[in-house]
Image 1 (cartoon, one colour):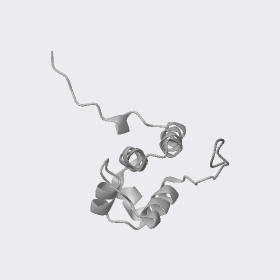
Image 2: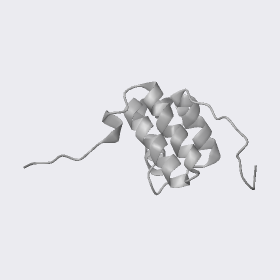
Image 3: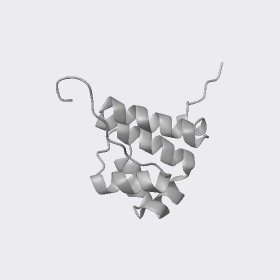
Length: 97
């Protein structure tokens, strides 16, 4: 039996599915998951176009949006804008909210 590597970006074809992944990542609060989710969506959309729209080089995007990446806030907001996504704040339930 031959197996192939699973590439999530190939299956995130709709903007709704992409937004769901990014929303789930932000809800987790895990910076590595957030960077990885944005990287997955950027690859699904085409890293060259996201790079052009965000004004961030492809190489910098690949680094920042990897599982080990830690994008600056300016990179994060530029990529979100290039993908057509926005951020929304909400009150959390619990001790902090």
